[in-house]
Every structure is written in C-alpha cells, then in structure tokens.
Length: 283
Image 1 (cartoon, helix red, strand yellow):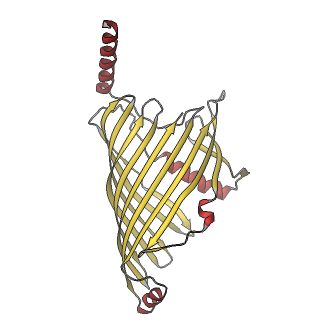
Image 2 (cartoon, rainbow, N blue to C red):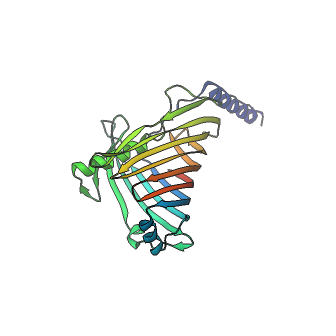
Image 3 (cartoon, rainbow, N blue to C red):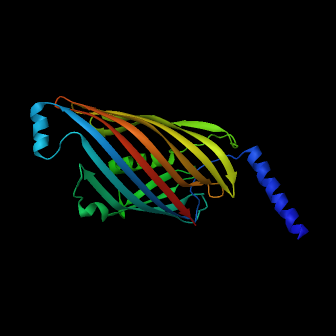
C-alpha cells in the first residue's frame, strides 16, 4: 500500500513538473491511426434588405420579405485513416467525408434541400510527406487534373494551418495569437480576402490532455462583379488537445458576425450567430 502511495505521489510530482516546464505543442497525423471526426454547425441569421424598388418588389413576389430570419444547420462526419510509415518516413492517408444533416429555414418556412446534398461521400486519397504535410494524390478513385488538385491542396493546407502552435514550450497561463491572412481565388481576378486570428490561452494540463480558451476575430471581403461583400466578427471557444496524439480532440465555439452586401440593386445589412462543435476520436 505504501509503495502504491509513493508511486502515485511520484506520478503527481512528474505531472506538475511537466506542467511547470511547459510542453511544445504540434498538430500532426501519426501513422497507423484512425481519426473519426464529427462537425456540427448552426447559424441564426437576421438580415434587412433595401435597394432598387423594382428588385425588392420582385423578391417579395418570390416570398422573400424583410427582415429575413433564417436558420441553417449542417452536420459532417469524416474519417481519416493513415497507413504504415515507409522507409522514407512518408505514409498513406485516406479521407472520407459525408454531409449527414443539412436543414435551412427562412422566415418560418423550410427550404427544400436536394437529396444528393446528403448522399455523396467525398473520398480523397493522399499521403503525409516527410515534413508532415498532406499531399493529395487522387479523389473519388481517379487521378485529378492540375486545377482540381490545386484547389483541393489549398483547402488541405488551410485545414492544416488552422492551428499553428509556437515552437516554444507552453505552460498554463501562456497565450499565443495565430494570424491567418489569406487570399483565395474564386473567379477571374476576384479573390476572397480573409483576415483574422485566434488567441489561445492554455488553461491547464491533466490526464494527458491540454485545455485551451479561444478568442477568434474574423474578417472577410470580396467582390463578385458589382457586388461587394464584407463579413466581420468575434467570439469565444474552448479546445481540448491530446498531448499523446498531437491532435485536438474537441473544439466548441460561438461566433457573432456582421454582414454587409452592397450592389447597384440590393444592399444587405445583417447579423449572424454561429455555434460550432467539433469532436475527434483517435485509435
């Protein structure tokens, strides 16, 4: 009994020492693992419309009257499976994602959703390079062309860069801010300009997990022909990170946004509240 007590005390002291010295965090996929993910997001939107009288009348004839109150919910399940590591320290990666829920309601009326939106699996095959990055090889079992590969690769790069921890060790109470200005080409010379950042604060470490607070700030602007779109917002959130697996196990957040759209026919001024929940089981 005394030996067990001494062992428990030693484990406690080692845990405390590790927390005091800090931990270097890094997100990376490990070979021979299965990552089962679930993402759920809901949005409540309130929008006022004004502009060209004839255009507003046309919207009314289609049942769109101001203010527009809309609710959207979407759920996505995904699985990422990694294979064994090769002699060159690279390993295969297969991704399978599916939209399992999609509902839209505007001014109390359900918006019909095409069945195909929740029927299709998105399957992507690739590998993890020597420097830990995802490299896309094929999609839907077919080799992809250069344009498609570039778009998918951009998306993968953005996903991997969502959380970039500093190279220094972090201990409870430490904070860091990740800024992520990004230009995303959409068509022609038009780009989506993303500006934002998330401030993370490490609250505690226990049981092989690290607990963070998150404060995001977000800005997005782009043009489509004569239409200018601007979205800004801020919010709060929490993240649980597995130290052993080098991967986040859960992220929950709430986000308040302001939306502005200007054009020669229609101006939109609205607000939105977005809540999101992400969870990941690793084995």
